Length: 71
Image (cartoon, rainbow, N blue to C red; front, side):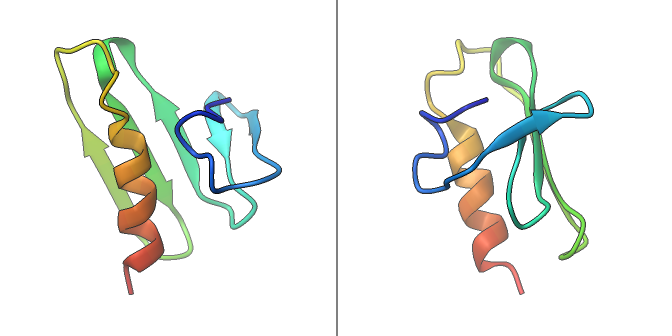
């Protein structure tokens, strides 16, 4: 799980090959080198990002904020 990236969320889980499953049903999977995919089934939203870095920019937290504000 990625508690450092999603510090505002409580009761994070992992499973079904996802690194983080949120209470609201959203899912996140990290890749090698900072890639990631964030899926919000309820909002019909997918945020994917690519990187060649070390993943220290925590783009996944940006994806979570996009989903929170997506209508």
